[in-house]
Image 1 (tube, protein in one colour):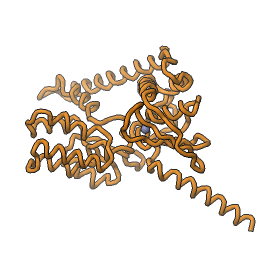
Image 2 (image 1 turned 90 degrees about the vertical axis):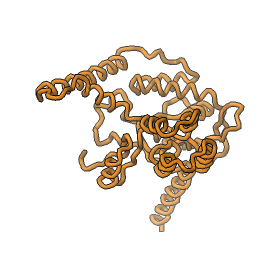
Image 3 (image 1 turned 90 degrees about the horizontal axis):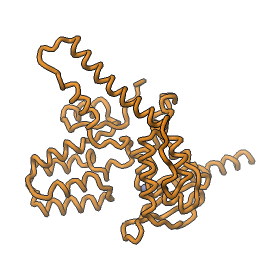
Image 4 (image 1 turned 45 degrees about the vertical axis):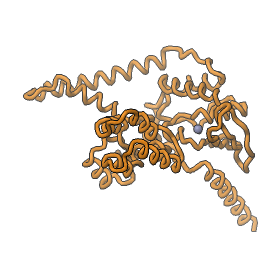
Amino acid sequence: MEGKMPKTVLTDGCLSMKKALNKVMPETVHRICSWHLLKNAIFHIHKTGFTKEFKKLIFRYYSNSEWEDNWKKLKDAYNLSNNIWFNEQYATRHKWADTFLRGHFFGGARATGICESMNAFIKKDLEKGLPLWMFLRHCDNGVAALRYNEMAENYKTNMTDPCPKLTSMPNIEEQAASIFTRKVFNLVKAEIKRGDKYSCSKSEILPNYDLFLVSKYMSNHPKRKVFISHDEEDIRCDCYWFETKGIPCRHIFASMKHSNKGNFPACLINSRWMKDAKDIDPKSVGKERRCPHPNAVQNTRMMEKKAQRDKKVERGS
Ligand SMILES: [Zn+2]
């Protein structure tokens, strides 16, 4: 790990791991697996319809105040003021609700299913008294199965045609097909398609950025803000989809279409999703963009410009 700590960690909510993470990796953002959380919700609260509403609080992206209002509504609707488990979950909401975790890179993972499936494979055929050499052979078979899956994905990415140009942004789609692995390309394509459902308007022109307001067609939902710098080196949306998943969001694609942009922006390529990710220097992987609030971007850029002007003045005097 070269002394580096992981930026994010996903656990099943085990208390001893929580204590260890606080002690050894205090900077690491800790998320509790949503599958385990829902399993516990079903176990602790036996009320029809509760899980469906609780899911919304886990997966939907609200403003902080909206989330708090919805939590209170859920508590009142199901009369949970005195439920110990429910109140405990409120105390750890920053570790499981998307609303509070947006902007931290988890690569799209919200459940520990990936490592659980490896656990399940190892546990299969594992018996008391199994000789060590047989256990190691069993582990080898597990690793071989994972490597086979990777090889099959590589083959699909490099040797088959993704049939691009099926969206309303064919240039962007074609470039995405040449940049990303097939699985990520399909996710990008889905976001481009979702972008078609949004309408967009250029709100104002800031010193170095264009600001777009994006909302669902004929909808009164709150508008998302997309900032696109004039040099196209910085593109951000206040939904933090890119910072969280490493894939540009539908709002960004809607704004790009509105402003007739025909190239996939370099600032929206996460190197770990590229076809040739294995050839990239490991030191440069994992430097995902941090997420200052988009409103702060404008101020940062203005300060940079001011600093440059001040330097010029100093040199001149
Ligand atoms: Zn967005």
